[in-house]
Amino acid sequence: MHKWRTLSITKPTMKAAWWKEAVVYQIYPRSFMDSNGDGIGDINGITQKLDYLKDLGVDVLWLSPIFESPDDDNGYDISDYCAIMEKFGTMEDFDHLLDQAHEKGLKIILDLVVNHTSDEHRWFQSSRSDRNSPYRDFYFWREEQPSNWLSFFGGEAWEYDAETSAYYLHLFSKKQPDLNWENETVRQEVYEMMHFWLKKGVDGFRMDVIPMISKYLNFPYIDTNDFVGAIENTYTNGPRLHEFLSEMNKQVLSHYDIMSMGEGIGIKPEQGNLYTDPDRKELQMIYHFDHMSLDWGKGGKFDPQEWKLTDFKRIFREWHQELGDKGWITTFLDNHDFPRMVSRFGNDVDYRELSAKLLATLLCTLRGTPCFYQGSEIGMTNVAFESVDQYRDIESVNKIKEYEQSNGDLEMLKPILQKVSRDNARTPMQWSDEMHGGFSTAQTTWIDSNPNYLKINVEANLTTENSVLHYYKSAIQLRKNHPTLVYGDFLEYAQESESLYLYRRWDSNGDYLILLNFSDELHALPEEVKAIAQTEKLLGNYLKESEKEGIIRPWEALVYRINPTD
Ligand code: TEU
Ligand code: CA
Image (cartoon, rainbow, N blue to C red; front, top):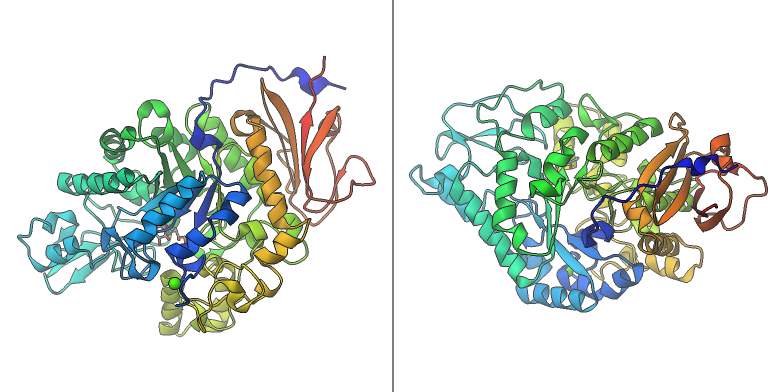
């Protein structure tokens, strides 16, 4: 009966840290809350909602960029790192937000976007206008086009600039020239800017495309049919990357008790510890994309394929094994760059609430710091925009243009956009069933709301006992009350199942069993799991107990504590 108690209980070697125990909540400021009725979310809007966030139980708020920017890529193109975007408010508004957040025990981390700046940043302006400018070498200028690199947002990554008769590198849009980290002054400027925010009391950074800051200076040719391969093999993990990160740690990060969370694009499990092993003194954690990109086809993100649970499980298993008791990851299933998690990994039609709750259970019981994106806590879904004119994201807009120019049938593109566009996650937060979901009192907002706000909104969730929101609160509290769910070891059952994700988290403080059914069908639990006896149920997303024993219902999520046996 108790054969599964034979797990050898070892002493935990994983070091405890507040940022491992924390739950992160990402805010996309322009879509969170509009306080002044201009149709754009803003900083004061966030301040208004701090009590809501505190009540949800999250600890750290990651704000997508709030800095001055011409907004070519919604603020990921920064023209002044130390100024607030006018649309979002003022520096006083920000100081007030930080103050209020701290008063409530919430931390705030900012988006550090230093692989590139805006082309409207004064460094680039000077660099472009004068070949002898001290800023010339802040960017990559070449007389001849060095290679065939492609940009993430379509077209070539080397842009010819007529003003100065040379090519510059931009891995993202033309308005996002890549910074040359080989130049020591660039690095010093970045570190100084980081100190500016940290001295204000900011609690850390999420670091945008950080694996890309060191370039292979021969800019090797890529296989243009394999963009994912180009990212992994050529654009990321350049020769001086770890040198730069150690330097940043030494000069900046190590001076504060803060969170550092790298966007881990292009990082493979075997590289995870190079970034996050504490002994190496670089970053605390990264979030890898392996489970997010597994359905990108050869042509990249706009060529979606179905994902498989076995791949998903294998990825987390491999990361877990590779990191061991050293490095650490952030876990996430969506953010402002991806479709909504319930639409992608759950079933947003027949089992929206159950599957949203299941995904929350997953993130709150996996090893890694969970990072939730605004709106997931009420089960917000992808949006089916009827017209391509409703898209705002540069990635989608460029794709639409490309289609138009090649006489592609836009009707064919529509279902793809509805599935993969980043705007799926960028529609306004749904607070109530009022106009624009209570996000704004303006007639029109910068992007249309998802019409399902009539049904899916915070107010309705607050007043419904069994709502997704209330479940989130319980799942978050569960993680906080049981540190084994943070630090414990990880053991899987039925690895080959395409429907069931079944695992155990355990250490000398406790032993937990997590059962997740990622399918629309009822399944029998494997014998080895049924044999685990004497358990206490801590969390479940169905109201009633199942009448049959040993089965798990569609999208059912269960967390048990396995009682110690003698
Ligand atoms: O994203 C990095 C990135 O590579 C994304 O382009 C991602 O691959 C893509 O969104 C998937 O479709 C970061 C930011 O999160 C993103 O919003 C920015 O557009 C990008 O960097 C440039 O700063
Ligand atoms: Ca506003």
